Length: 475
Image 1 (tube, one colour):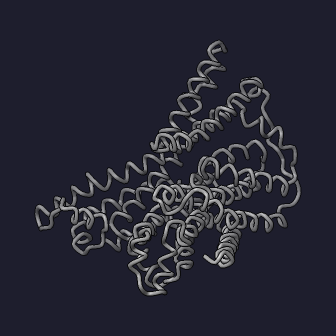
Image 2 (cartoon, rainbow, N blue to C red):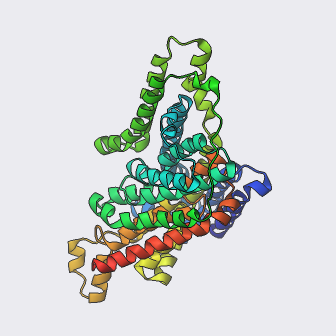
Image 3 (spheres, one colour):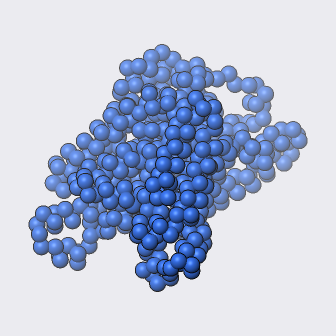
């Protein structure tokens, strides 16, 4: 079953990639593999666990709470999968889904109240190249302050107000994904993986900003420069319907823009202060914005009030995107629990050996497999080296290598860069890419043909800058 699970995942991934030729929504194969992998896992639990392939089960056994055996052992194994692993991973997945649902709803509320019109009215240029650079840098810094997923949702909604042509908008949305992932890599709150490393103690705030900022800028700027030679002419803006403009006045538009952006910015502050999961801060922001919309529309005619009601607006949220996330994350969770990802991480360590190559390989793999379990696997494989463990190492070469894994060591910094930006190589390689794909219906093959090579060049260029920077600083 261990190998069959990998085969099923690959087949499902191919179906997702061929969504448009097959004319089957990508959420369908995602949900299918998200459930089938757990079915195969529980049926093959005995063989997988007795072979020692699952780190989760091994830790469970060593903790003294598991049993082996033919009858009771199998029952205990299945109980472990259902009552421990599924519940554990469902909790993590739910945090992402509720965060995404809350963020998408806030963006839709702001959009429905013409809040983004306040920004689009100030972006006067229709020159493709100028607009591309403006939006990319805006995305880059917004992603560091918010996170790459939320920023992508906001910027794709903004793009709909600026670009009417679908093909052109796909190029712009793709650059938003690249810029959002680049911006999230150098900020401790900009990406799920950097949050993991930050909370885990592998990196500190000031260090990750100083060491990863320049490579992140390069990984965005290189594709921008290359696209500047191909994106000629001007964009055509969508025609604004007069009827919709009459729904809100200037004050309401500005109010909802401020509330929407403030609500999203509040989330990292909420997490820092309360130490609660980010989705709770997102839902709190949503509840406040929801209350404000109810109050400001109290005296409006019923029809206008209905159109601006959150109950109406929430129907516009892309639910297939939510289901797609649910399926993909469930599938990856099964592979993580059963041990396939651990085996992969071990293979990388054994064959690549170089710290730089391991991190770069993780970055490339994150374009195919979710970067969260890959980073989690790396964090599990390489514990943080402290002063006591360093003092016990006598071999000079081993001591030098161990320095890479200290807090703020090169391995962790470079891992933050690679895992954060490598997902841009494929559209489904990052949460930002999946969100853009769902909102704009970007074709997987189209992205791979027109953007993947640009993203790869930027990724390698940024990695080169990081390597040179590390050599110059003698770290």
